Image 1 (tube, rainbow, N blue to C red):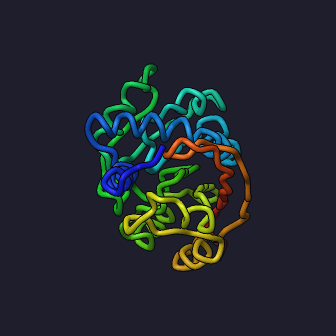
Image 2 (spheres, rainbow, N blue to C red):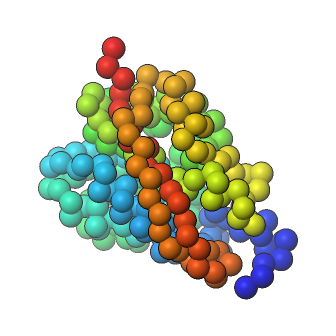
Length: 218
């Protein structure tokens, strides 16, 4: 399916901040196409009983019930810049065990040392101030906490038709440079490959990375 330039631009806008009826559909599509990346992220979080978990950019949070079954008494908090995704996530919060809020994409509205785990999947391209948000993650992450940032690799992303000015692309070098602006450190890069259906309806091989990040011990 060939998209027009107008459709490509609208898709880019919707991917960065889903809005309205089209945003709901984009959110459903993102949940389906990103579920492999999301489940891998949850696996590498190494969740333990009574962990407090923060997710930045949770989308419609179709993965919520799976995450909550990994360990007992998980406190899950989700932050979104998209009002549409915030509203859709509430529909998946059937047990009311999760708490969702809107935020400005830069300042995390929680106290220092609030979370054992922080995760974000396919959002880093759209961070308006990456250095500020990394510093905020450092601030809210508890000692011995784990943060997983998961993203499709720069070499894969740069050839996609809908990737334009709203995207900031990352490879290992760019991620290391970003993390170095904080007191966090990359503990491990985990590289994976999967077959997915592109936004244009084609089957493509996607390479992605999970950056496992911890607080640097002084």
